[in-house]
Amino acid sequence: MKVFLIRTTTGIIYAAVLLVGILVSPYTFAALFSVITGLCLWEFYGLVNNKNQVALPRLFNVLGGMYLFVATFLFSYEGFGFSIFLPYFGYLMLVFILELYRRKENPLLNLAYSFLGQVYIALPIALLNRVAFLPNSAEEVLYNKNLILLALFIFIWANDTGAYLVGMSIGKRRLFERVSPKKSWEGFFGGMTFAILSALVIVYFNPEIRHIQWVGLSILVVIFATFGDLSESLMKRTLNVKDSGNALPGHGGFLDRFDSMLFAIYALFFYTEVVLR
Figure (tube, rainbow, N blue to C red):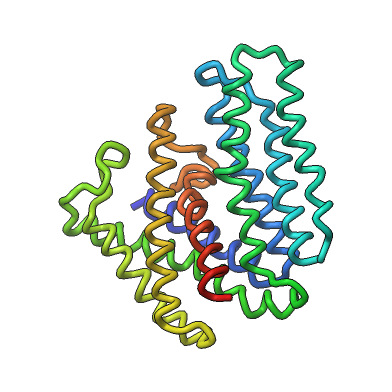
């Protein structure tokens, strides 16, 4: 019961911070998710650093990923030109150049893990800006589109809740036992059902997007969120760690909390670009 209360309290605070960050203004959105980017990158690079001959410039890579988010925000919302990304391209080049001088045991692994963190964490979170804002109408678009950002998290929360309740009740057939022994097919479809139900509720708050479109988005988010969760489980199992960190009591680290979101953002981005726009 104590663990449950701790986990619930952390979850409520986490949800409240996300709601405030997304709804108050574009700048609270930018501040919140740039910090989330940095914290997730910090945990990721901390996990892989000093493992199997890996020795990364941790802070340098974290700052590079945070800059990508900020640059994408300025490009999408403030109307900055493409030149705003030039410092990020400079960071990518410096990652290579630094390895020439650092004289570490395995520079190739250092490069591989440095870029993996950018593609796995920094890039998808930066793409949230392209979901939130449309050219030439930033203020209006945030008001109209913030429900899509909230829907991403609502679908993931509904999926997690449904998967847990159904999986604990009737889960027998393992979904991916090699990576995550506790996940079941029954839990997967239970989570999807909860997400679809939440989509049918959301449609009443944004009727501009049709029922079938909301349902399609919820199904897509559940599928890719599951892959995101499994991928982080594979990474932790490979590195022989239980959690990515301990910053969130009852939930582990920030990467543990946002792992499902990372893959789901790619699905959300392509869905909004192809179906909703």
